[in-house]
Image (cartoon, rainbow over all chains, first blue to last red; front, side):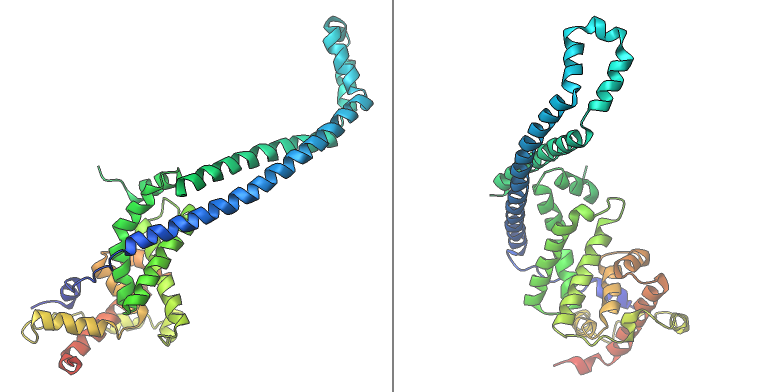
Length: 132
Length: 191
């Protein structure tokens, strides 16, 4: 007596068409290459844009630091640290008050964006070279 | 020591491109056979199998290593095949597809009895079963093939088909019962 499950288990398996595995791997490689190209393009554009923004925001930050007085307070700390230590509380408050926070946060955001997008661009180039 | 599927995938995600080839090599025949049993068309089965592995590649970062890879892979294989069949309008889906089954049906079924070996020769039986398998509902076929050929548990299959455990067991019993009933009339299938 043979159970139907045993018979099903023993049904011959289909033979995988020759080259199917290779063609799957090849298709994946093509798609990987395409994806890397798209990522490279996207992050490349992003890197360039963030770098341009970085230059503009740096200029704005520098101007703001000079006009707001932060620059003078920092110069004072560097030129005569002994004087600065005696009035450190006043200087600290003055620096905090004069810092152009908005420009500074834009600048820092752009630095981070630039670093990340540059790294991603390099990563995509690397991956594109591997899949090429 | 042989690497587990999760380890191979981790390696792939950390940059080892050849790890994906290992996964493809390991499961290609399993997926192809499963697809072929669900949809008995050689050229379409080849395309579906390709599609399955492309989907695996596209979604591999979504794979949760805590999950059984085989279950995840066969879920993709099953869904891809069913979608393909729907597009080609190969199968008219019955109310079984909704998963709303009469759970008591399984209980009403008698235990599966063995087949009398002397009715058919082994080869004849295999051939007839192959033909009969094509007549089953895709869900019944999926459950039977995954349980018998892929040694998956009903619990794992319920995850693949996203259906309750009792429904899976019911599919299994119904499928086998249908095969058993029809195999008796198998000589009619002979060309």
